Image (cartoon, rainbow, N blue to C red):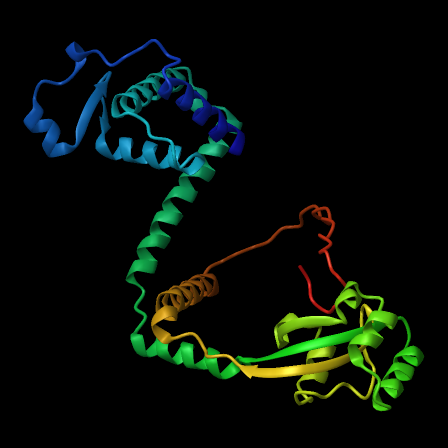
Length: 298
């Protein structure tokens, strides 16, 4: 399907950029301008109409591939005429009856209708301001707006981490020990990680940090997938939550999507849906994210 769309679009762009020597001749155009304005009729090709709606759809199609592409109106009309001529000839030869083409038509038709109906449903779905405010408050209540400015020392084993904790307890400087002992790239800056929220840390580190006050360090080594950490909380601050006004639009969209999903689930519940055995899809390799072993990812 994607290949077919690509071929059609390539043909369109060739025509739109003047690679075709054809043009819409004035003498072939309808003379009844009153009728054309009333119906949005632009042209007829062997009796088949080309309308303003078709031009608008072609503009949208070209914009999907290049938003900066500005196509003259006469080129859009010429492209639609060319497509209609090819379509009529293809139908005459029974091209639409070929199994592969018929399958693509079926898929495309269902996609167009279902997406259009979905947009209609979304517009009709009623989300009240009270519902949006409730969702906003739920998110505010479930979000930790505390941030910690932290430093850490990362080593390979628990024993070494315990030795460093002992040195810190005896008064040795955290940053100096980080420069000498930490295997993380942050050792160059004394183990400083900067400001982090709980979601920006490894879960084990976040749990440990949440129990510390400013100036405290972990008295027990913290194990993560990167090794063993000693974490120092340099400073703690509370962030202001985003205002309701800034969140209202996005939250309204979220709630509408949730209601749309529930609408579809209700359709499933009262429908007869059967699944048949299919070939197992190949497992795609997981993307490896770059990390500096500091408990956060890039």
